[in-house]
Image (cartoon, rainbow, N blue to C red):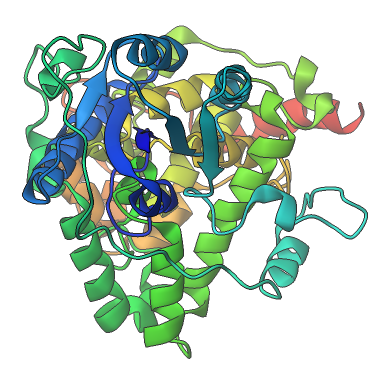
Length: 467
């Protein structure tokens, strides 16, 4: 049987259910089909991981093909040009893609083709983690406790040999040239991504093994400090699918069962985010809590732009946004702070922050991005309460006490003392002059101070609380 395996954000050969089953059932034609609305940074990250996967498949004697056309059109053209018998793919949980996949799968099934779908994104299919009454959980702790009673399926074998199909040149609906997708930006701004993130599943597997074997025991203690290497840094590989979440889950429990609980909890938090996306797909652009539908956002465009480019005058916030702009990544503790500052201090709609992250992060996972912004703004499931407004100055002192993170990303402030660098607008004129800092010139005054922003936010959230 000739089987087209449609690839999306599952660019790997290990624990790939669709590829694994196709190997058993016949000859494989792996095809990556590009989706619409990918963020700019994620496009480039996709290109690099496609290059890595293509090299791996070629070592096995096969070829990775790509298509620039929408998925249904690609399949329809391939059916016409090349006699395939079956379509296999791992399920996507992006709301639009999910509906599209179901419609086109039913259509080609009705035409007599074999269609098989698999779980290649989550630890468990979403319907296996519901309450006894069939409803989804909206609070994480009960979800987590319930989830840990479940048995996560074992990983499927790594593809080390298979029968691959090669198509003749007469087939024009797909190509072996990844460059036809035009995922690489015209202007070169990718050095920070290249320097910080080796692409491909081999790099991903090596990274997660090192973390679990050597560092997971200290994860609970170190994960909140942005200046040190205390996190796994695997999110970009999970987002593109170069790394299987099930393989990470089982490896952690096998190798470090006594000290990996805090890390496992974060994997289940990701699972919870996907549950929310599946059962409440409208949350990609609307609040889960309907009381927020009429929230009095200010949406000051100038303030939003200053936030985007790390010019708010709040050092921790600006450091995070500059790290994002430079590397396509931001430490999670800082993500919570920048999201809180945008939605609560600046009163900018969370969907605008969600959109900026989507375009600039290389780990822009649809479920995590949606869930995280809903949580930070207070409008989502198990969200931070409306009165929880991160104080970026206290957060700096607690998690970056020596200002190593701030000094790395805001070098114009590096000569200030550890105390003054966290709140330079409160520093003395002599301290600023000695450090070469001119507020309003070399570094901006705060767009909104914490005290003023918190007061304003509480008034706005008070209106929501009253309904």
